[in-house]
Length: 223
Image 1 (cartoon, rainbow, N blue to C red):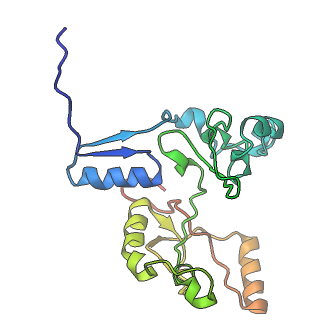
Image 2 (image 1 turned 135 degrees about the vertical axis):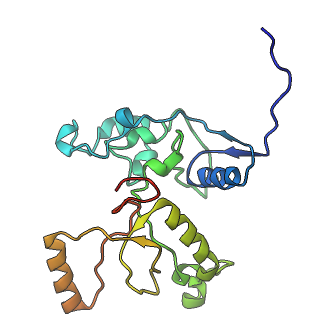
Image 3 (image 1 turned 90 degrees about the vertical axis):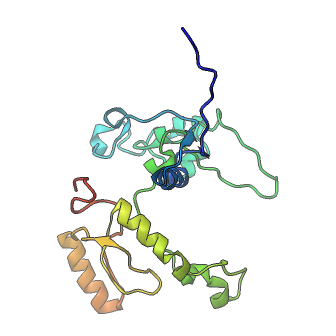
């Protein structure tokens, strides 16, 4: 056997395959670059690891998970709203993955080690920030404004939404900008009734979630 001593040269190295790393790799490879991606965890197998279509009655703890086991193995990760019986396998074991922080500046480090990172546990909620967030300091006088505005990010929001597919309704709300939406999810009968009453009595806006769930076929993917 003859082993090649010529090392392959890559144009870019991407560490982590989550939302940020995955998109960076997509953009670079589409420009023709050779990209090497490093990921600390293994790939997940949908038929084995995914629980999206599992009913609570099919789970031992009805979806809430074994709280004793979570406390023992994932005392930090379990504090994330998404870490439960459906998805705890997408979060790290805190004892195997410790971290440190300044005693006066503690923080929760929520992590996932698998191909795709934490994209397995973000609930697909896809809302745009507005200048209510980016320019909050100018409105309430606290801290500092972000160094860019919503208009600066708008074309990038458009690009990402057009690629992944986000369903939602256009509402014309300044504090929650509209996006490149697929048709929204239908409201249930109860939600329709609630919407009518709430909007009539309180003047509040009730709308379907804006989520990265396809309601129509999109880029070759079925709804």
